[in-house]
Image (tube, rainbow, N blue to C red; front, side, top):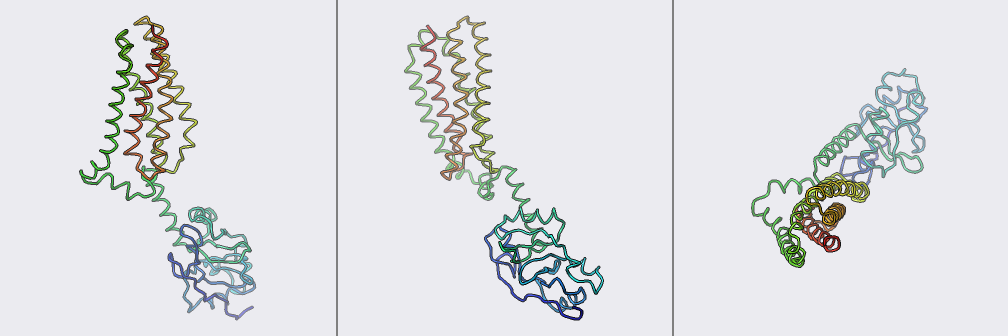
Length: 340
């Protein structure tokens, strides 16, 4: 159809991201798409399309949409149009299978789809294949940069709210005390409870002073195992890994660590103190403490995270208190049964 001017849309659909954008939720492809782009028919000649582009303002003209009654048939880059013969029609120049996404597609997935296909623009179409708009190349670059910065922040241990995470490192001494002292006060209460529990087993300690030798070691091992799991859990939460994905591997790891440490302590106690009953009590307590430490270290960060508190402040003191109490109870229960 030589000599006929290309048909373009003058419709502009406003959106916060870009003048001429199609309406859409933030973070979706539609939020970055613009309807103010060149739209032509497949049977139009390249010469007619180029004449139709002159003197018009578009939000993006790097890609021309080829449509029939609003239905997308293909995309043609401006480079292909300029390189084509004047008499060539758009259906010969266009890419008949361009990258397309739905309006609700996540912005990162949409941008990577365009990159993998090698197109400077991305078409957003509805369920019927009708063109909603095009995501121009500058918006694709902005999306990729934004997602890249977010991934780096998350890999660095920041929460999605990176500003709140950074504030914890630069806040005043007064704010630091305000955030930490309440949790440490809970730890102080736990220490008092530990003393009460120790007093309840005074008879066992008086009968065999060697029993007391291993309390610090068992408590330390349980706290160490719990601290390792707690660090993994908090790091996982900061990068979007749910606690559920950590339960099975961390629990199995805690059991294996407890079994190996308990077996080693059993051999040492039997060899040095020649007391199989005490050795068995220490080994059982080590195994139980290491296993329960993992569960406590997973449960507390998850609970604090769900309640809107920073797990980095509260989970450590709380986990220490709970784990120490459990370790003392398990150890003395085993001593009561096995040590004569």
